[in-house]
Length: 253
Image (cartoon, rainbow, N blue to C red):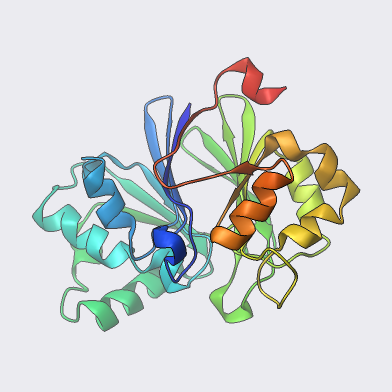
C-alpha cells in the first residue's frame, strides 16, 4: 500500500502548499481522499489518468476539499474517458452536492452525472459502517463548519485501519479516532489555539494519548508556523509530493 500526498496545505495555499488530498494505491485499487481546487493539477503533474480512480472520498463540502470534482469529472468525459464504475463517497446527499457544484462552476454540464459510470454513496455524518465491493470503511463524526457536513473516514486496507480526519476542531472524538487507526492523516492547521474549526499543535500537545500515538500520526493541512512547531516537537509532517509506503512492518510499530 502506498500513499501519495497530492497536497498538504489549507484553503489559501500558504507556503505554496496545495490543498490537502491523498492518492492511495492498495491491492490494485486507486483511492482519492478529498478533491479540492488543486487536485486535478496535482494528478496531472503525476501523469495519473483520472479514469484509473476507483473511489473518491469527500470529507466535507468546502471548496478546498471537493471543488476539484467539477474539473475532474469533466476530464473523465473529454480527456480520460471513464470505462469502469467510479464510486464517489460523501456525507449526506453527495450527488446533489456535486450537481450543485457543476451548476455553479460549469453551468450546462450537469448531464455528465448521468453520462458517466458513477455511483454515489452517501454516508452518515454521525458515523456508520459501509462496504462497497471488498472495501470496508467507516464514517466518523468530525466538528468543523456544520453546514459543510464534516466527516472523517477509517478505511480498512490490507488488514490495517487508515484514518483521514478531513477538517475538524479539537473535540472529544479525536483521541478515540486516532486510537482506532494504525496510521492516521490528521489535520493541524494552527500552531497555537487561535480559533475554532481546526486543530492546533498546542491542543495535540495537551493530550497524553496523542503523545503516546505520535509515531502513527501524519499531520497535514499545514502552513509554515504549524509545520515548524510540530516538527520540532517530533511529529511526522507531510509535504506536497511525499510518497509513503505503508505496507512495511516498521511503519506499524
